[in-house]
Image (cartoon, rainbow, N blue to C red; front, side, top):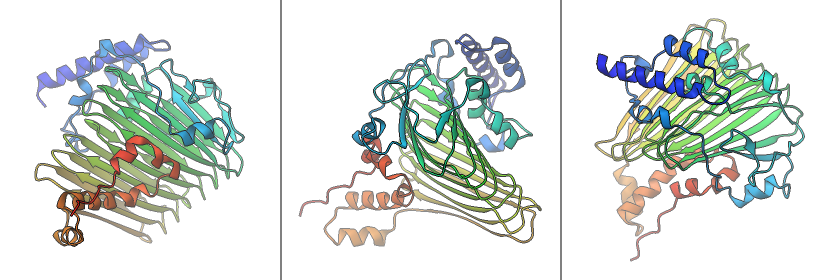
Length: 429
């Protein structure tokens, strides 16, 4: 990156921080300090050498707003939120004032086992900084931390599972949204959190989830994010796991001009389970980037990670999965696999599973594959009367289904996800 480009990027960042400082709850002094303390990453950094931030910096900081549209909740979610079904499900949508409200715009009726935390106890980045004591926070988390609100803090208790669905939809250009969710799961608590994020205009969405899992707690997170070619997504999940806790995360993303997802999980004393599954569908000129880190601080921890990507047209998928196993993490059992489907000669896949192991009594594996659709599979379907285009789409759907089947069943009713999975009609004879 040239000096002139760096100067423009720094000027853009300073203008952005000044604009954010003018928002209600903004801190002008803190924003100015942030501008001096950090800069936008460049491609000279190993972690960013494939990532172009042009989609983000094309936003005009002087025109940013927080206007949102009501998500198009499927009927099943409306019934659950109105109490016609399970009382342990809560659906919330983010409005333009930074409030989390029900699908009809009503204040949320908190179900048993879910209690809001006082706003004074919520500070964006408080969990992330304990997990990453050295070095800067990821870009999405840093931008979230300097954006005033909205924050949602929840304490989860009791053995009965609670379902929380969060919806965000952006339809007006120049939107800037950085919602922050803090979850504190008491010992033995169970929560299923689903994100539904959509952007149909030039905008930036930078959500951050921070979670502390007590002993034996279980958190299942499902993130479904779809955007347009002019929209940017910068997300991150920072999870502190206690012994015997279980964290499952499934993410599906497509359509964004730029998407960078950065989950960071730390098993503080080991003896916990982490399951990470992600799917990136990069078509058009999408750049979908996933950087994950799982750190084991104690023995007998478990990890199962699978990242799948499909790249077509000029789409670009990037994956960097880092697993750190220090000497204290004996008897760690970790597996990591990156599977990729390349459908165009102009598309691109960059994948880097990464194991950093010091302990000597572990079972750790990793692998990566990049392949095209197989001619014998296409021929088999064509021999059954299915056209080549339809056969290709069926095989692509089968590839995606390996991850999609891990989503909560209700999530499959969202129209954008259904359109992504449309089953082609076989050619007529």
